[in-house]
Image (tube, rainbow, N blue to C red):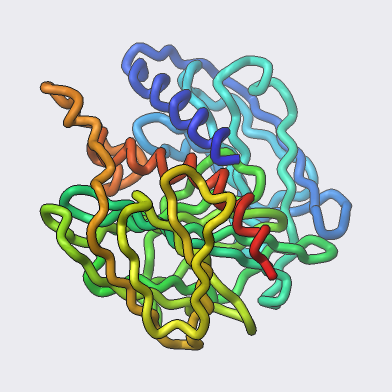
Length: 340
């Protein structure tokens, strides 16, 4: 899923680069709504047609839909990706339409779901990933959320999904990849009682939330920060990975701490940590060789425009972000080995 997301970003960026020379065309886009909860044709309160060019620009809107719908005679750039967004029971469902006649002429099927506020339909695993840079620590928190509702329903509950962010965190960025979607959705985090609220429905199937921030550690100095599992069930735990392996990570105030030594990603250390309920653990980081920056190998480093959010604003940090995502493939396959 994440691999598909990065392919989409590259594809999307290439088309944005040539946006000034795009020609417009008039299209009629057909769609059909399926209700994944009932198995019947579905309904929606509204449907929007959005052009993914120079941001997101709405060009058509339909109301009160039942079964099939159609956007008739809409002018759109002929090489820009389109997004159809349905709203049903307050939840948005998106369908990406690539800029080719094959997809634009094909009837687009979009599945919507009834909603549930039962937290027991969510099976959640999470990790904390610490990476040493020369002047800061990069912290990536990944949440793999499996909505196992039967029949399938979207999880919607106000002020439920809350993620702890330490007070000394900087460069905060968060995104959500829903179910089988290829699109990372940037998240605007609202203050909650103990942390930051994720005010997004969780669709049936597997969703991923990534929250990234930095902790100052100038000239590879020691650094301290706290972490908490706000939404947790009995015996929940989090695996904390760190890189490089020669970095020392001390964790205090945990209920249980187990160092993991086998089948780890290369040059990575890890702990399995059971957190105290509604309380923080303390993490102290010292030593370790900083991950080498791209600019250190290039006398003329190339700056990068913001694409995914403020955190990825240079090639240096983009590289480290990609490293984190690559590690994710290993990490989530690894984490379930230690589920017991």
